[in-house]
Image 1 (cartoon, rainbow, N blue to C red):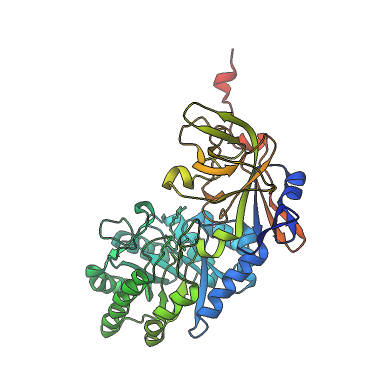
Image 2: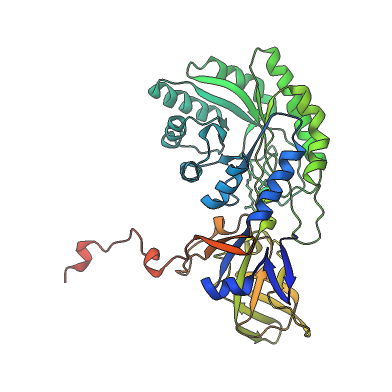
Length: 420
Ligand code: LLP
């Protein structure tokens, strides 16, 4: 990412030194580049310019309302999967008519809130969910706009935890059952069928699975239209991968070009739900070295961020590049970069060759703009890090560091325990 580069031997985000941010806000912190976020969504806009489209950013990747607003300013909407994400999207000022709502376990309460907000479309994942939505819509005296999430059974060749389009997956409705499920939907009095949705997985590094899946969906659209279904919104999902290490995922343009004939032929309004490819490489997690520790079998660099801030290495054996914020020539050493959390699985990198670090120095964990802060936790009673948005030679705090009191929010000791 060109937004992260060394100037005067110090790693910068745009024109701001990460060391200067650390000085102001402490560590660990997340920094996102506004220019990088805009650049990524503009790449999507250009690549899909030939079809009417909506770029609905997957809020699960990065839910900060300043990030959502950045995309909204570029015309983007949001893909939400919970009442909480609906709340975030609305708080960011996203037009409700640019919201699509997926997820296998939407509750009636969540459906009611989304219907009330008048969102664009519900992406429905099961028959029971369809019935529930029909009931909720009836109670509000409205019709719920619906797409069915169809599972095309295409292998995306990615990590099993983030592959979602296979037969054994909990997501979506099997493609073989789709037509009959649509017929059920069309008969429900408070449901309006308006679209179709699929999403096969995340961190995809090849074009072929997209094309294969969407070719199957294109056929299905024809079959549905033959049944008089008015399929006018086609949500093609997200999933495009990014470079964490040496992956070379297709460019947005390559992916778009490969599927463009299908999209055009359909005549549909195209919705897409990218998450990682919009935000992943636009963010870093900056952490300070607390101690270094030379063991018999391993050398450790103990830092002040860990699995509570970035769980991807622990959960998916994911690779994140790690760079010293100050670059000066020194010997390299093979180390595990570990956090302070009381779990052996708490590492940011294993067996990584890094310049020899000393306590107090800063490290930048790269590609931490997606599925990083959103997957963070308070385990070990650790306040969540501060998030900042960098723009040019300035930056703003977009979420304060949590305080010790924040950790106790909502908790109370009942009277029964206070009686002595
Ligand atoms: N749409 C749906 C229905 C999804 O389930 C997802 C991601 C997306 C869009 C966005 O996919 P993206 O463009 O970001 O690949 N925590 C994992 C990733 C989980 C992805 C879940 N669904 C990770 O850290 O790699």
